[in-house]
Every structure is written in C-alpha cells, then in structure tokens.
Image 1 (cartoon, rainbow, N blue to C red):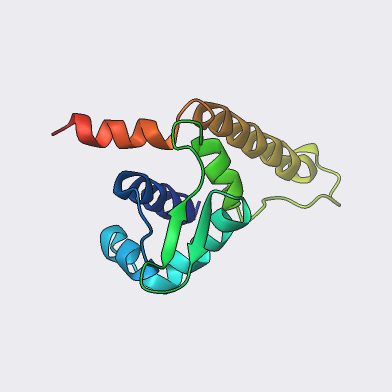
Image 2 (cartoon, one colour):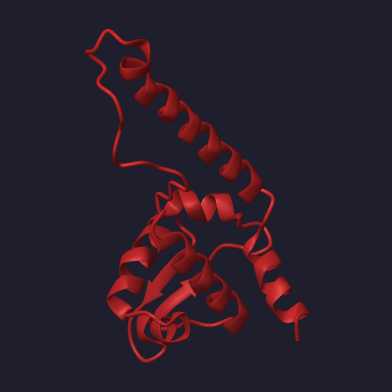
Amino acid sequence: MDSSFNLAVHALVCLSHSGRSLSSEALAENICTNSTRVRRVMAGLKKAGMVETREGLDGGYRLTADPAALTLRQVAEAVNTRFVDCAWRSGDIDRECAICSGMAGVMDALYRQMNEQCAAYLAQITVADIETQLFEKQ
C-alpha cells in the first residue's frame, strides 16, 4: 500500500474540521508532505465528488461530502488503494509441478480476500469517526 490513502484521510479530516476551503499548501503543511503530492491525491477525491476546488483568495479544496456518511472504504476506492499486494509472484504457471504452477494464483486469491476484508472493515468507519477519535484524546 502506498501513502495515498493515509494522505486522503488526513486531508479530508482537515477539511471537515476547518469547515472551509484549504489550499494544497495548507493541507501539505498539516500533512507534512509536499503540495504536489497533495494535489495528485486530491484529484482522485475530486473525481469521486468528495471535494471541490475553487480559484482565488478563498480558493483551494472544500469538502462536499458529508463527513458522517463518507466511509473510509469510499476514500480508499477513490484513491485506488490496495491494502495487500505483491509485485513479485513465485513459481511458473507453465511448469508441471502443482506447487510451482499454482502458488501465484493461490496467493493472488489470498491477497484479494484480505483486500475485501479491509474494505468491509473500512465501510464501518467514517471521516467524522476519525475526527471524533482525534479530539477525544484532548
């Protein structure tokens, strides 16, 4: 998993808590990353209808989704998050050995099931829930 999901959740909580538009620079400052990375991730959230952009002095990103209804599963889907993945596959599908030829398929199914379980868990958590957790600690 890359950091896009973490960045997206962080940005959405910032926008929810602020109740106003925030520039990519302001978000980047709070997230502790660079504004280019923020803009890349926010593009997925904009495409999914979770945020909108505005030009001008009050410009930046504004949350358009209801944080109490916006699930972390929806956020993960908007930024194409795969929680479990493997770039390398063992074995060789063209070999006669059942282990060698079958292991990649078995592992792919395992990763797919783990991603589905992560998505099901995240469907129960909203952006508002994360914001609440952050401010309960104070």
